[in-house]
Length: 212
Image (cartoon, rainbow, N blue to C red):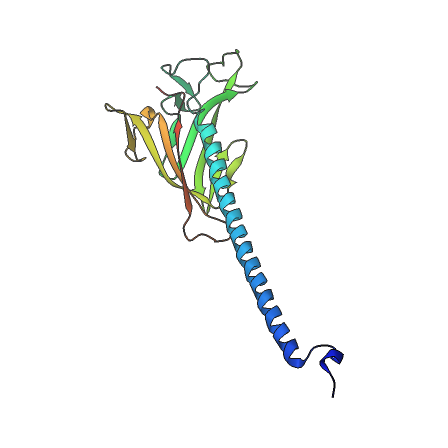
């Protein structure tokens, strides 16, 4: 008879119990890892979506603030250039696209007006529009339908005009574009992995500086 004090190693039952407990512990750790990884992936995608929306609105707003600029003259002055009468015809748009016209510095420019440093100007036109699942930009120095941001679209574009009360928000088909002095753009941004069931929306109101 072998006394307990002389026993060495584990019995089969003890080994099985140890394996079961170890397996349960490993499963718990694995489940925690999977859950943490999924949360981290979702947070990363949300950050990317927010960054896409912010960058797109920022780039569009930068160009929108230049619309109608025609040199060192007041907004009440009208100037012909590139087939456009500034500032009234400098803005064009639909429910899903925006076209901005303005004068910009150019040593070889032939625009009728000059900037406030007596520099020459030339006309410039840039268009932002939906193209497939992205927002694209078209401009002479950029090319046609070049991707601005991926997985984003114009969800809605509203045109804001002065009204007797304060201001009127109108859709493109109803807007009097020469009098529009603000834009309200809403973007729908999707994540690249399909993590979210619906796109996130971002809305911004942009004031047009060179309008009456």
